Amino acid sequence: MIFSSIALVAFISTAVQAHFQLQYPIPRGPFVQDSEPTFCDGYTNAVDNRTVFPLSNGVINMNSEHPLWSAGVIVSTYQNPINFSDFNSSSGYQLAVQFFQQSGEGDYCFPIDLATSNIAGVKDGANVTIQIVFDGGDGTLYQCADLTLSANVTTPTGTTSDCTNVTSSSSTATTTATSPSSTSSGSASKGVEVGSGVIAGVFSMLMLLSAV
Ligand SMILES: *[C@@H]1O[C@H](CO)[C@@H](O)[C@H](O)[C@H]1NC(C)=O
Ligand SMILES: *[C@@H]1O[C@H](CO)[C@@H](O)[C@H](O)[C@H]1NC(C)=O
Ligand SMILES: *[C@@H]1O[C@H](CO)[C@@H](O)[C@H](O)[C@H]1NC(C)=O
Ligand SMILES: *[C@@H]1O[C@H](CO)[C@@H](O)[C@H](O)[C@H]1NC(C)=O
Ligand SMILES: *[C@@H]1O[C@H](CO)[C@@H](O)[C@H](O)[C@H]1NC(C)=O
Ligand SMILES: *[C@@H]1O[C@H](CO)[C@@H](O)[C@H](O)[C@H]1NC(C)=O
Image (cartoon, rainbow, N blue to C red; front, side, top):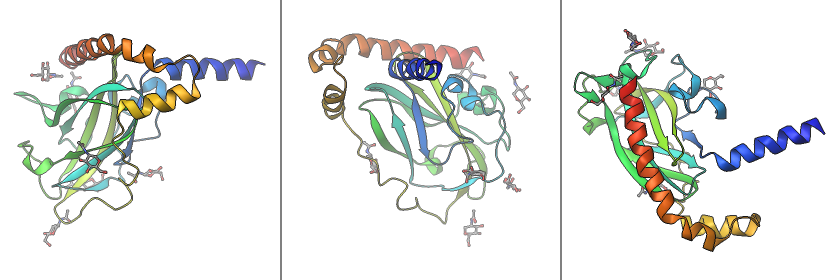
Protein backbone atom coordinates (compact mmCIF):
# COMPACT_ATOMS: atom_id res chain seq x y z
CA MET A 1 0.00 0.00 0.00
CA ILE A 2 2.72 2.45 1.02
CA PHE A 3 4.90 1.16 -1.79
CA SER A 4 2.20 1.67 -4.37
CA SER A 5 1.57 5.23 -3.13
CA ILE A 6 5.25 6.02 -3.41
CA ALA A 7 5.32 4.49 -6.87
CA LEU A 8 2.31 6.57 -7.87
CA VAL A 9 3.86 9.81 -6.57
CA ALA A 10 7.09 8.94 -8.36
CA PHE A 11 5.15 8.25 -11.53
CA ILE A 12 3.23 11.53 -11.33
CA SER A 13 6.35 13.61 -10.71
CA THR A 14 8.02 11.86 -13.64
CA ALA A 15 5.03 12.63 -15.81
CA VAL A 16 4.80 16.33 -14.99
CA GLN A 17 8.49 17.15 -14.80
CA ALA A 18 10.59 17.33 -17.93
CA HIS A 19 13.85 15.45 -17.56
CA PHE A 20 16.58 14.21 -19.81
CA GLN A 21 19.22 11.53 -19.53
CA LEU A 22 22.64 11.79 -21.09
CA GLN A 23 23.37 8.46 -22.83
CA TYR A 24 26.70 9.18 -24.51
CA PRO A 25 29.24 10.18 -23.38
CA ILE A 26 28.64 8.46 -20.02
CA PRO A 27 27.72 11.00 -17.33
CA ARG A 28 29.64 11.53 -14.08
CA GLY A 29 27.35 9.17 -12.25
CA PRO A 30 24.00 7.41 -12.56
CA PHE A 31 21.10 9.73 -13.37
CA VAL A 32 19.50 11.21 -10.21
CA GLN A 33 16.18 12.75 -11.12
CA ASP A 34 15.88 14.98 -8.04
CA SER A 35 19.39 16.39 -8.46
CA GLU A 36 19.14 17.22 -12.15
CA PRO A 37 18.14 20.86 -11.49
CA THR A 38 21.55 21.35 -9.84
CA PHE A 39 25.13 21.58 -11.10
CA CYS A 40 26.18 18.38 -12.91
CA ASP A 41 23.12 16.45 -11.65
CA GLY A 42 24.47 16.78 -8.12
CA TYR A 43 27.90 15.27 -8.90
CA THR A 44 30.38 17.89 -7.77
CA ASN A 45 33.60 16.03 -8.55
CA ALA A 46 35.12 14.83 -11.81
CA VAL A 47 35.64 11.09 -12.25
CA ASP A 48 39.03 9.53 -13.08
CA ASN A 49 37.73 7.07 -15.67
CA ARG A 50 37.14 9.68 -18.35
CA THR A 51 35.60 8.92 -21.71
CA VAL A 52 38.13 9.30 -24.52
CA PHE A 53 36.09 11.54 -26.78
CA PRO A 54 36.64 12.78 -30.35
CA LEU A 55 38.20 16.24 -30.51
CA SER A 56 36.45 16.71 -33.87
CA ASN A 57 33.05 15.55 -35.06
CA GLY A 58 31.78 14.21 -31.73
CA VAL A 59 28.17 13.26 -31.12
CA ILE A 60 26.06 13.59 -27.98
CA ASN A 61 23.20 11.15 -27.39
CA MET A 62 20.52 12.08 -24.88
CA ASN A 63 16.99 11.00 -24.07
CA SER A 64 14.46 13.82 -23.86
CA GLU A 65 11.32 13.21 -21.83
CA HIS A 66 9.76 16.45 -22.98
CA PRO A 67 8.04 17.17 -26.30
CA LEU A 68 9.55 20.65 -26.74
CA TRP A 69 12.87 21.63 -25.26
CA SER A 70 16.06 23.58 -25.68
CA ALA A 71 19.62 22.54 -24.93
CA GLY A 72 23.19 23.72 -25.18
CA VAL A 73 26.60 22.49 -24.07
CA ILE A 74 29.14 24.37 -21.96
CA VAL A 75 32.73 23.28 -21.44
CA SER A 76 35.24 23.49 -18.63
CA THR A 77 38.94 22.89 -19.15
CA TYR A 78 39.60 22.45 -15.44
CA GLN A 79 40.70 18.98 -14.30
CA ASN A 80 37.99 19.07 -11.61
CA PRO A 81 35.36 21.72 -12.34
CA ILE A 82 33.17 22.12 -9.25
CA ASN A 83 30.95 25.12 -10.03
CA PHE A 84 29.45 27.08 -12.91
CA SER A 85 32.28 29.65 -12.85
CA ASP A 86 34.61 26.86 -13.94
CA PHE A 87 32.62 26.66 -17.21
CA ASN A 88 33.11 30.38 -17.98
CA SER A 89 36.04 32.33 -19.33
CA SER A 90 36.47 36.03 -18.64
CA SER A 91 34.29 36.66 -21.71
CA GLY A 92 31.40 34.45 -20.57
CA TYR A 93 30.08 30.94 -21.17
CA GLN A 94 32.41 28.52 -22.91
CA LEU A 95 29.76 27.24 -25.31
CA ALA A 96 30.61 24.19 -27.40
CA VAL A 97 27.06 23.83 -28.71
CA GLN A 98 24.92 26.95 -29.00
CA PHE A 99 21.47 26.71 -27.41
CA PHE A 100 19.01 25.23 -29.88
CA GLN A 101 15.33 24.35 -29.69
CA GLN A 102 13.97 20.96 -30.69
CA SER A 103 10.70 19.06 -30.51
CA GLY A 104 10.36 15.37 -29.77
CA GLU A 105 10.71 12.87 -26.95
CA GLY A 106 13.21 10.03 -27.09
CA ASP A 107 16.86 9.50 -28.00
CA TYR A 108 18.23 12.52 -29.78
CA CYS A 109 21.74 12.90 -31.16
CA PHE A 110 23.43 16.15 -32.03
CA PRO A 111 26.93 17.02 -33.20
CA ILE A 112 29.60 18.63 -31.02
CA ASP A 113 32.82 19.78 -32.63
CA LEU A 114 35.11 20.82 -29.81
CA ALA A 115 38.02 21.44 -32.18
CA THR A 116 36.24 24.42 -33.71
CA SER A 117 34.80 25.74 -30.42
CA ASN A 118 37.62 28.29 -29.98
CA ILE A 119 37.88 27.52 -26.27
CA ALA A 120 41.36 28.01 -24.84
CA GLY A 121 42.86 24.73 -23.68
CA VAL A 122 40.67 22.51 -25.85
CA LYS A 123 43.11 20.28 -27.76
CA ASP A 124 44.25 16.72 -28.33
CA GLY A 125 44.92 15.02 -24.98
CA ALA A 126 43.17 17.67 -22.88
CA ASN A 127 40.92 16.72 -19.98
CA VAL A 128 37.67 18.66 -20.22
CA THR A 129 34.17 18.40 -18.77
CA ILE A 130 31.07 19.06 -20.81
CA GLN A 131 27.84 20.10 -19.13
CA ILE A 132 24.57 19.66 -21.01
CA VAL A 133 22.12 22.42 -20.12
CA PHE A 134 18.53 21.38 -20.87
CA ASP A 135 15.24 23.19 -20.51
CA GLY A 136 11.91 21.54 -21.22
CA GLY A 137 9.92 24.61 -20.15
CA ASP A 138 9.77 23.98 -16.39
CA GLY A 139 13.29 24.68 -15.20
CA THR A 140 16.88 24.12 -16.15
CA LEU A 141 18.51 20.70 -15.84
CA TYR A 142 22.16 19.70 -15.94
CA GLN A 143 24.30 16.61 -16.60
CA CYS A 144 28.07 16.42 -16.96
CA ALA A 145 30.57 14.08 -18.57
CA ASP A 146 34.31 14.08 -17.92
CA LEU A 147 36.35 13.56 -21.07
CA THR A 148 39.86 13.17 -22.41
CA LEU A 149 39.85 14.64 -25.90
CA SER A 150 41.56 12.72 -28.65
CA ALA A 151 42.29 13.55 -32.26
CA ASN A 152 42.70 9.83 -32.92
CA VAL A 153 39.26 8.42 -32.10
CA THR A 154 35.81 8.60 -33.67
CA THR A 155 32.42 8.11 -32.05
CA PRO A 156 32.08 4.38 -31.26
CA THR A 157 29.47 2.62 -33.37
CA GLY A 158 26.50 1.64 -31.26
CA THR A 159 26.56 4.71 -29.02
CA THR A 160 24.32 6.61 -31.43
CA SER A 161 22.42 3.75 -33.04
CA ASP A 162 19.31 4.39 -30.91
CA CYS A 163 19.02 7.96 -32.12
CA THR A 164 15.87 8.49 -34.06
CA ASN A 165 15.79 12.28 -33.53
CA VAL A 166 12.09 11.79 -32.94
CA THR A 167 9.57 14.48 -33.77
CA SER A 168 6.72 15.53 -31.52
CA SER A 169 4.14 14.14 -33.95
CA SER A 170 5.43 10.58 -33.56
CA SER A 171 5.80 10.89 -29.78
CA THR A 172 2.31 12.39 -29.51
CA ALA A 173 0.95 9.34 -31.29
CA THR A 174 2.68 7.07 -28.76
CA THR A 175 1.46 9.14 -25.82
CA THR A 176 -2.10 9.14 -27.09
CA ALA A 177 -2.06 5.38 -27.44
CA THR A 178 -0.78 4.72 -23.91
CA SER A 179 -2.27 7.56 -21.87
CA PRO A 180 -6.01 8.24 -21.95
CA SER A 181 -5.57 11.69 -20.35
CA SER A 182 -3.39 12.93 -23.17
CA THR A 183 -5.06 13.58 -26.50
CA SER A 184 -3.47 14.92 -29.62
CA SER A 185 -5.93 17.81 -29.78
CA GLY A 186 -5.03 18.73 -26.19
CA SER A 187 -1.32 18.88 -26.89
CA ALA A 188 -1.87 20.69 -30.18
CA SER A 189 -3.85 23.46 -28.50
CA LYS A 190 -1.10 23.85 -25.92
CA GLY A 191 1.61 24.30 -28.54
CA VAL A 192 1.85 28.08 -28.22
CA GLU A 193 1.92 28.01 -24.41
CA VAL A 194 4.62 25.36 -24.36
CA GLY A 195 6.63 27.36 -26.87
CA SER A 196 6.57 30.54 -24.80
CA GLY A 197 7.33 28.43 -21.73
CA VAL A 198 10.50 27.19 -23.38
CA ILE A 199 11.49 30.72 -24.36
CA ALA A 200 10.84 31.88 -20.80
CA GLY A 201 12.83 28.84 -19.70
CA VAL A 202 15.81 29.84 -21.83
CA PHE A 203 15.76 33.24 -20.17
CA SER A 204 15.55 31.70 -16.71
CA MET A 205 18.37 29.36 -17.77
CA LEU A 206 20.50 32.37 -18.67
CA MET A 207 19.48 34.12 -15.44
CA LEU A 208 20.38 31.02 -13.44
CA LEU A 209 23.78 30.77 -15.10
CA SER A 210 24.42 34.46 -14.53
CA ALA A 211 23.36 34.23 -10.89
CA VAL A 212 26.05 31.73 -9.96
C1 LIG B 1 43.62 13.56 -17.20
O1 LIG B 1 42.90 12.93 -16.17
C2 LIG B 1 43.42 11.67 -15.82
C3 LIG B 1 42.44 11.01 -14.85
O2 LIG B 1 41.91 11.91 -13.94
C4 LIG B 1 44.82 11.87 -15.22
O3 LIG B 1 45.38 10.65 -14.87
C5 LIG B 1 45.69 12.55 -16.27
O4 LIG B 1 46.96 12.85 -15.72
C6 LIG B 1 45.05 13.83 -16.78
N1 LIG B 1 45.79 14.33 -17.92
C7 LIG B 1 46.15 15.60 -18.04
C8 LIG B 1 46.82 15.96 -19.33
O5 LIG B 1 45.93 16.43 -17.18
C1 LIG C 1 33.53 4.72 -14.42
O1 LIG C 1 33.48 3.64 -13.51
C2 LIG C 1 32.20 3.48 -12.90
C3 LIG C 1 32.35 2.40 -11.85
O2 LIG C 1 32.90 1.24 -12.40
C4 LIG C 1 31.18 3.11 -13.97
O3 LIG C 1 29.91 2.93 -13.39
C5 LIG C 1 31.13 4.24 -14.99
O4 LIG C 1 30.25 3.90 -16.04
C6 LIG C 1 32.51 4.52 -15.55
N1 LIG C 1 32.47 5.75 -16.34
C7 LIG C 1 32.98 5.83 -17.55
C8 LIG C 1 32.90 7.17 -18.21
O5 LIG C 1 33.48 4.88 -18.14
C1 LIG D 1 34.59 27.78 -8.33
O1 LIG D 1 35.59 26.80 -8.16
C2 LIG D 1 36.92 27.30 -8.33
C3 LIG D 1 37.86 26.12 -8.22
O2 LIG D 1 37.66 25.22 -9.30
C4 LIG D 1 37.20 28.36 -7.27
O3 LIG D 1 38.49 28.91 -7.50
C5 LIG D 1 36.17 29.47 -7.36
O4 LIG D 1 36.35 30.37 -6.30
C6 LIG D 1 34.75 28.89 -7.30
N1 LIG D 1 33.81 29.96 -7.58
C7 LIG D 1 32.74 30.14 -6.84
C8 LIG D 1 31.84 31.27 -7.27
O5 LIG D 1 32.46 29.45 -5.87
C1 LIG E 1 29.17 33.34 -17.23
O1 LIG E 1 29.06 34.15 -18.38
C2 LIG E 1 27.79 34.72 -18.55
C3 LIG E 1 27.74 35.39 -19.90
O2 LIG E 1 28.71 36.39 -20.00
C4 LIG E 1 27.55 35.69 -17.38
O3 LIG E 1 26.27 36.25 -17.52
C5 LIG E 1 27.64 34.91 -16.08
O4 LIG E 1 27.57 35.81 -15.01
C6 LIG E 1 28.91 34.12 -15.97
N1 LIG E 1 28.78 33.17 -14.86
C7 LIG E 1 29.73 32.97 -14.00
C8 LIG E 1 29.42 31.93 -13.00
O5 LIG E 1 30.78 33.58 -14.01
C1 LIG F 1 20.25 12.93 -35.78
O1 LIG F 1 20.95 11.79 -35.31
C2 LIG F 1 22.12 11.46 -36.04
C3 LIG F 1 22.71 10.20 -35.46
O2 LIG F 1 21.81 9.14 -35.67
C4 LIG F 1 23.11 12.62 -35.98
O3 LIG F 1 24.25 12.31 -36.71
C5 LIG F 1 22.46 13.88 -36.53
O4 LIG F 1 23.33 14.97 -36.39
C6 LIG F 1 21.15 14.17 -35.82
N1 LIG F 1 20.47 15.27 -36.47
C7 LIG F 1 20.41 16.50 -35.96
C8 LIG F 1 19.63 17.50 -36.73
O5 LIG F 1 20.94 16.80 -34.92
C1 LIG G 1 46.97 11.08 -31.09
O1 LIG G 1 48.03 10.68 -31.95
C2 LIG G 1 49.18 11.53 -31.89
C3 LIG G 1 50.15 11.04 -32.97
O2 LIG G 1 50.41 9.68 -32.80
C4 LIG G 1 49.79 11.46 -30.49
O3 LIG G 1 50.90 12.32 -30.41
C5 LIG G 1 48.73 11.90 -29.50
O4 LIG G 1 49.21 11.77 -28.17
C6 LIG G 1 47.43 11.08 -29.64
N1 LIG G 1 46.41 11.64 -28.78
C7 LIG G 1 45.91 11.00 -27.72
C8 LIG G 1 44.89 11.74 -26.90
O5 LIG G 1 46.24 9.87 -27.40
